[in-house]
Length: 432
Ligand code: DOR
Ligand code: ZN
Image (cartoon, rainbow, N blue to C red; front, side, top):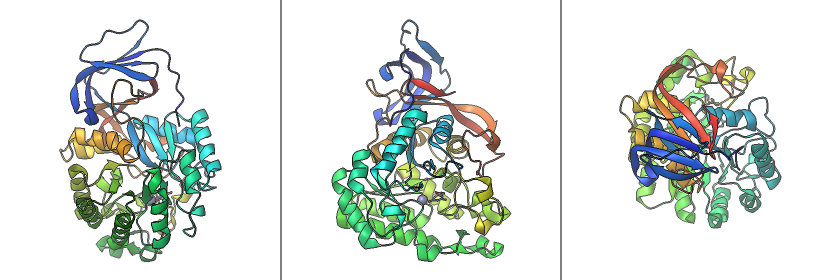
């Protein structure tokens, strides 16, 4: 669970604008870190002897960002990503913790795989790693995985992400089973019959391009089903990567009726539409697909009003050989850890679509709350996980320089203003 933490010396982050949504703080403050822990926060703190001083004047000091939807690919697909490269990508992108999905090989459906991932995280990781266990054995959707032992081993949620669980009865039983563990089931909401053979959103663009499209309804029917099952069981259902206006409406309605439903959205579904597919770039292919302007507007609105609880990248690394060639044969998914913060600062915060403090909350305190993770707030006594942003830093996205082992991004060449500036995990600077 824990990162490579050296600890020891004190660290004083001086003069930054601290935005700590969970504590209602937005003010210039110094933050003192001692023995991996935040010990004091005050407008002016003296530096203890020997302390490393970080001058954060003009920077934004936030609780460490947490990405609850990442594919680290280890074990089994180390040619796409490993715990070592994925957590370095996370650190470079401003994240201090990630939750990793279960679609590895072998699948994380029993505790030996969870133990393995956590051991790799301890020896190779530079940010915190929280595994997510599979709902069904082998992600086959036929019988439940070893849910109790997965929870005991440290899985913070359950998901067959990458695949929907089409059997509603089995999903209902999973929800009932995990209820006492107090952790959510995370739904990859996709009706597999409606999406079979498709590679993008169904609409004008898919017709023009001659590609088979998946209707928004393929997502909406499953979001509706899962909310109804959460209502039936009392379980916490978390909907992954919301992409349609209809899904936003369904989550909003579910929340207003008191159902324990939460949701996330990715940066790419917030800032890109199906129009990006026109160049047949396989780096615009993911599941769920990019939708329409109407959908992105609903997603932004839902993120601002709290219908959507958090932002998660769905970092899905694939090798070049899997992402070149014909669009309809390419793998689904794009990397996101190293572009998320900059894309969101430049395209949503700078133009005023989302307040900065809302973005910070949706990337730190909100994900921590959803999965009961440590962190998410800057409080004396809390682990010193800190993300510092520079709103003025300008750069051009260069996939060749990613720490990730994979390069499959649609944002290559984008000029962005605003970026993560420093990432601190347990008091250790893991990226600067
Ligand atoms: O595009 C995607 N890629 N969506 C998923 O749900 C899974 C992911 C992957 O594992 O590559
Ligand atoms: Zn998914």
